[in-house]
Image (cartoon, rainbow, N blue to C red; front, side, top):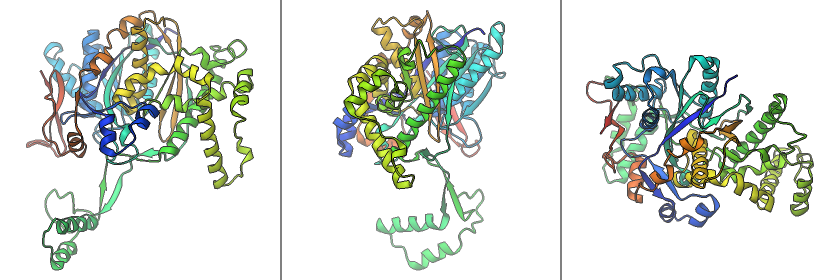
Length: 516
């Protein structure tokens, strides 16, 4: 079967950032821990005119212009996101609307009419799922049909103010060109998968009684000095929810359904789910690769040593090297190198040595977490990280979490760094490990193509990052709370959100335009 894969990648990120040192001072946090411990230098923050759709559309536009693509040649635009703008209307349709606005003058009205678009959601692995699906679609068409697909990733990784996840925020969008005979990375059809239904990170539909909302408003009014009589409060509460006001959204039901952009999560549990999922997906990949004849365990005892770069989902820059000890350990068990490591740090904890009770399982997890940290401090693992993971972290340190796009940001970071360092990567194999809470992991492989330098040379990722605009804590909080109404940096040569539910539009209808 002809090769299919990634032909090019374009990235868009907000022009605003909040420096991690300023964030640490603002929150009274230990900057050394955030920077040296987690690899954080700055977080990208969307401006007033930016959202999931604009970031995705700007990336697709960059990809189209750079590759001189005609809309009629693009068969699909599949978006991976966990920051969708609507519960029914795909965010991908907003992206298509913006693209048609910009390209209709040259290619005609409805120039994307025959393009298939959809959103795919599975937390941070949604864009990997969209790419997996699109790779299959391109391959199924055969080389002669010249199918071209674009995979989009776009997210605003936003956490509650003051929460333990706040320092891992970030944002951005990207677009991946998928076709036959790719210039950047060929992706063989061998995928390791691990799925398990867990509650490590999610964004639930939250319920609140309308009576509670009114009571809270009255309490706030009293705290601000307003005179609220008991009689007034009783009169208001007595008639809930019996409002007859047309288009009433607050009092028409006993309960309100509230959606928040910020998640409910258990950080430690999520890290364990991440490690376990990737390990199991790796085991599945290794088994399938042996079946397909792509890997001979007799000649290549350690599979991860065959990967020149290891690209993983990075909710924070150092997550890869903090999580990968599990795979590193599994890939070296029963080999002389593991005997050397255990002689240095001691034997690993075994589940069977702990009581089969909730307390026993918790104790094992704590011991296993501690053992991962011991592995990460060994010389063998540090060399492994320096050679295969370090370059993937560089851009993440400056942007933060991009949710569905974090794995592809890591890929661009590594490939541009290799280009700038004049490293020879042609024909080298790289391992990719996607993860989405909930939870699922996919492990797959890429083969670097002869034209990779040409593509990587056009990223200009680090050059563009150096031109961003720093914001202070006041602006940061105003943007986070949605209080700011005017953009910090006026949009220029980009798509921008210009209105929501304006006069003449339906409630919640979003309007966008290209700003020269």
